[in-house]
Length: 230
Image 1 (cartoon, rainbow, N blue to C red):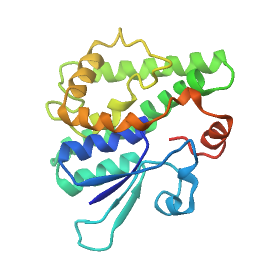
Image 2 (image 1 turned 90 degrees about the vertical axis):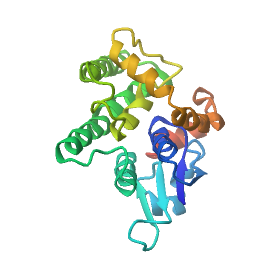
Image 3 (image 1 turned 45 degrees about the vertical axis):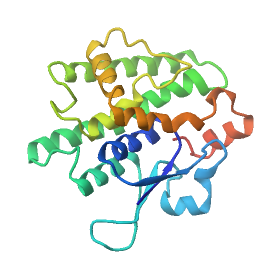
Image 4 (image 1 turned 30 degrees about the horizontal axis):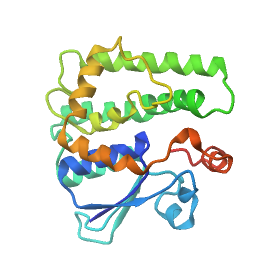
């Protein structure tokens, strides 16, 4: 059994993509980041950075005590190694997959997150910030679009954790839609993954999320004032 500490943000959505594809037994523990669940002492034991997702694996491969993990990229790598799925086993394939996983963690996710913050959540519009992060997201989408040209998935013919990491971050903010028209390969790839049965099941887990734009001032303070942004 995997305990998944979860709220349906782009980072949170990565892990159900894997769990559903791999057919692993799991249960969700909701971490309502608007109400400060990520700052509670019990959760900080699992995720010292105060962010979700996190997991507890109650049946680790070594047969020992449960293993807890935080950081979505680390969780995806752990699950891939545990199951032998969605991560190439040959040296060159693994390196290729891991570099694109880290590209998402270091670039696509943080930059798109900043785009979303200044276009959706910021209490007042800041033109420089909006333009700066829109340009950077566009640049990163261009990198991904060129990578996907001639490839079914990011690493070739096989669906991997690199795809699972990147997919939830594509046009992630309904209140600030990003123009994907220039990125034909990204649109093709995005639609293909969206149609996978496991993706459909994983996406259904987000139905309990409230409208982010309706946050109270207290929820906004918790989410953005104490390092709890997911």
